[in-house]
Image 1: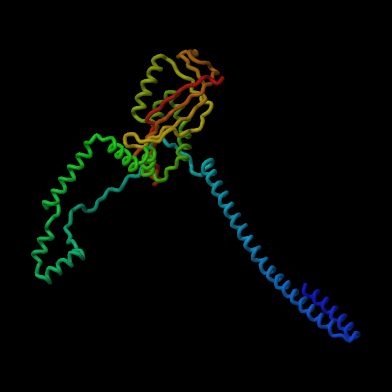
Image 2 (image 1 turned 180 degrees about the vertical axis):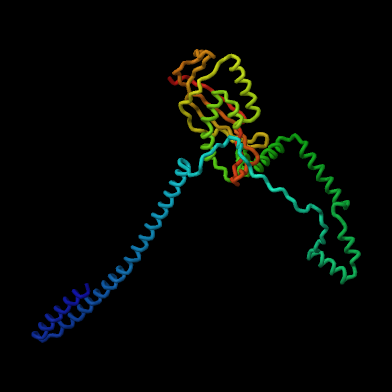
Length: 359
């Protein structure tokens, strides 16, 4: 450091001064003075460098800490978002309820309006432009002329009618032409304006149910799958009427009547219900329509009215794939307690397909 250099210079000065006094020469002292000046200059330079380094060190440490803190905060935020998404997908706190079952409880009835319904004539306030127009007519004395101008409709002029006829002729030629390029333009314009069928369906779904969530919808359908499948296997029409549309109920009535006439019934045992998957989202009859699928592991065993097995076996397990066509109703329901239920998804169609026995 600087103190060590000073001590060296001081010892050198004392030794040189004593030697110079003994020899009676001043050249040694002059060389010592020049060497000492160089030593002090080096000491000052090193001291300044040490001071600058000491001042820069906290700044660099602070910047490094800031960068580390920012990186840690960003990482923590990313992990928090990821955990939240996984938690909402796998174990959502939103209660799972039936998406297809008809609500049969009491509903909130709107209060009947008992106020007046008579028409009342009110004076219309004139706009600022109308007032300025009237003032101009009064000052210039051209009120009658301005009134006539104001009463003229552009649509009644001959020039407007001629231009309208020309536009209609062009439009008619455009609509009746068979040129492939114009058909392609119309197709691109239609796709650009309306979007894909699935996006249009999702748009309509969110208009009817602003809080619609596809993951929650899948959970609610899986909640219905065991009970509806059980009702189908046991020919329980009363339960199916709460979930299915009238056309599907008519189909089930015919199928169940055929089984009842023959005295046959299937074993309704369901061993496992798989996850629900979205197959397609589209529009049908201006209503959103979602096709889903899931599979069940159930017993393949059909008995007659005496209990004899006529198809399959008592321990034969098969995988059956079910496809549901769900149509969203237009409006939801407000219960008597004031709870708002989203529009119901009615099972409009159902298909099933059996696979080879698993055992």
